[in-house]
Image (cartoon, rainbow, N blue to C red):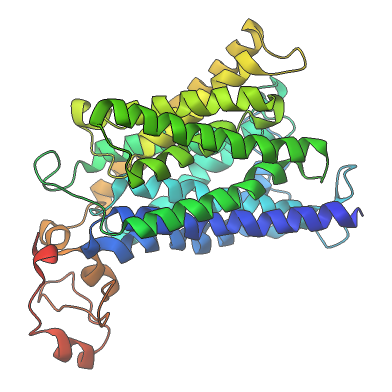
Length: 428
């Protein structure tokens, strides 16, 4: 056992875990105050659901023995056959360390989708969607990309830390789910500004911090490649932020806080698949292109009419595509060229097609059975009080609306709040 590399991976695991709460703050600050807690919970619940499923069968389906390049076997159900002394190949790394590191990727990916559905879906239905989606979509795609025998792995598609498996996968799934659920009440007619830009900046900072574990940790050993990935992560993110702000200045004449945070995330997304295979100058190019492309792409929802609430499609899908394709152009070591670019394109579009089709199908089935979208009165009044019996600020108790969706925390809480006037921001 290599104790230094084991410590490196475990520390990287902790950094990646912080990304999910960071995402919760990032998304939570961007929604209106009446559904801020719901947005936080849509990310946090993934930590519970996916962690359990990963142990039960997720790890086995991703990294078990290959079947036709499409899915892993079931020999590790319940992590059977994996104990504290089992090492991952010749790396000197315990399989359990590798398993918990990969678990954090599985947790984060469905949480990314939640931002597209902000303010309008049932929390219980969202939990079911997460469980089904990681099973049907994420686990197979992760096997394709990262497991020996997976067809994209054997094709040598470069995806160092998750451009296709995480960001393209989640981004196109978000688009599919939005097309099923529909837009928020008031989309394209009402202003829906972020309720807390400081929370957005805090979330972006936590994501940036955790992304060093996400990217450098994917090397699984503390070596020069991990160091290069860390450096490229930093410079690409900075370049993307500058690119986004420059484009925003030209279009709107401002340098917005929200644009600063979103540009940084776009750079983090784009460098994820490519950072270990480009030099720092290439990382800057990838970041600049991603910043401009993603800033442009977030405006498409208004022109095309799909309500991607928090720009998951514009940032994660577009950023993931940019980073995955540009590695075929900018990779060092003789990898760049038409052949590699073709492989990268095949990887991107095959993941897009599979994820969109099954994500749309899952959303349709849920909507037709248990109902995916919240009721109109719940959406209008805010999801926090209906699904969580709490409010983000103030005394934090439920407002009893008298409808079937309300769930006061207790009779005493209901008595204390039933006469409380609903603030104007909630009435909107």
